[in-house]
Length: 279
Image (cartoon, rainbow, N blue to C red; front, top):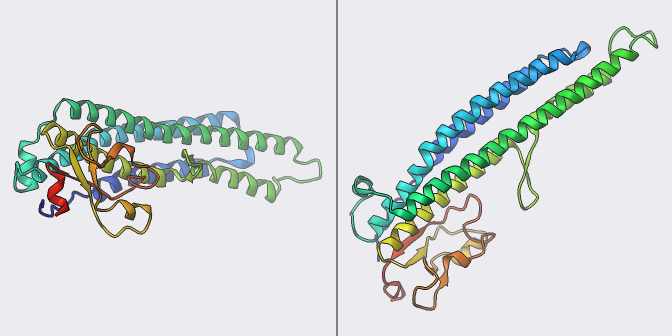
């Protein structure tokens, strides 16, 4: 039986990116709050949109640099885990020194980096579209309100109108990402879920790719007393490639809504001979 190996965790790296998104959203909220709703011109709204675009460009650059650094790091961890699990090194520290991506992992990492960057870019694009929509709506509301101001002797905008416009502006950065299951996420919450999921899946897939490259075609799913449907798969022996001999389920056929779902903490330990685990 493979000895218990401490698994790499990614709380620190994920929190770095989440903090960047939170800071950017706060900066956008501050920029929008400076708009003079009592006399909002198209020139002022255009300037605010330009400032928001600059904030999002900076965030995109920061997130791209994060992906370039940390997604390959998760893949390196996955390869190192396989090296230790298969007995080619005694510790993760030792394994890290001899990690070298095989062809399939090189291609996988390139794809994982591109996919993660595209997913993060979709978040900022969504925020950008929503901010533009909201600012234009509030600008139109302000201009219409000013056209009718004074008809009833009012010299200032109605308090209800101002409050409605402020609420509309406040909703700009609360816009959510709707996932495939129809769930709505706040941008920073979605980013946290996305990056935790990507880091975990990158580590897991890299472990599998390295194991198969070393002639180990089986794995066992970790145990940590899950309370959701994952618990039905804990300790399960699986094939890492569909044509491996034996009456085991292929890992690629397991339902992703039950195991290896978003933010799933389960990992796979590579083994050469699954019969040793059945004794």
